[in-house]
Length: 356
Image (tube, rainbow, N blue to C red; front, side, top):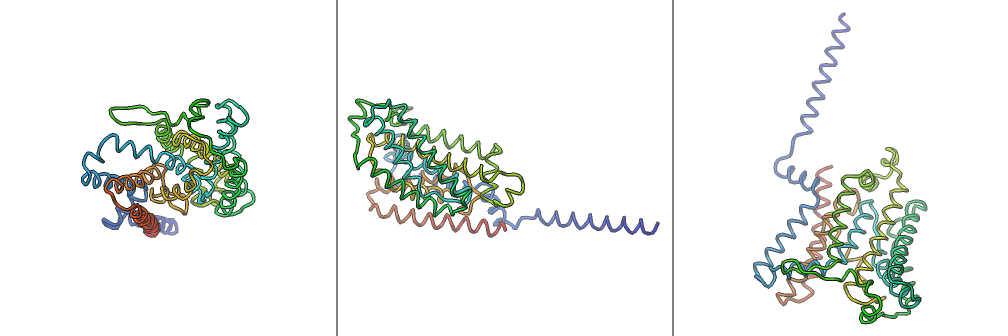
């Protein structure tokens, strides 16, 4: 009987300690702790605040010259290519990888679309499908080398960037297909460049595609099993494997989807510049990484949102247009973007350190 009483006392004491520990774990560390928690849960808050602040500052400095529907939608038109490629880059970085080949895939896919149409006489819609398929195949090869051969994503995509870029120049023979020829014989290739007005604001199909793409990917990452698997693989692939996640299948899907999105960016690039040029979009890989980092997606994987990468691209667009309208030297844009990149990584490290 006394033993039963002793066990009961032991269980009650253990329960008290458990409650005490749980109560302690729920304690926040004042304002700094609450701020850290908000930023940890909503990683796109910081770039959103920076974006709104930048718009307000340039709006006050430039007035209606900047703060108008035309100027603001012009920013969307200018960042549509980077925004689409950044969405692809975001998926890879969320898995704790990086894709340096996104720009090369984009350009090569656009060259495939143009050359298949004008060199071989293939109907433009079929050529577009071939270009999209090319992006998927290159993405699949990247994914297979990363997930099956276990090569580092940086090395794989760095090599693929060189291979695809060289193939692009060799296949196209550095030939540019002029916008006049495309408009006269294959206007479908310029579909993403079609414009329409909404209350004085000028939008393009490419801008609409970018916004819809970000919305769809945001939903998929937050509300589907596939999205949870992407975050799990980026956070800890070994733990994800033990919990039943097929890491190989997840990585393959991410890299293939990234390649497909980059191919769509190649189609949008034709609409944006009007022509098919093998030398266009050479900095898309760096620009996409810039947008992703400024957008609050962690380079260590497992944390961030596609919406943040869109904010990151828009921040770059706002600074570029605002400083240009102010007549400032273009180098100031690079300086401010560089500072934002370092600040974004510092904030990410701070969030991870405090949350740990």
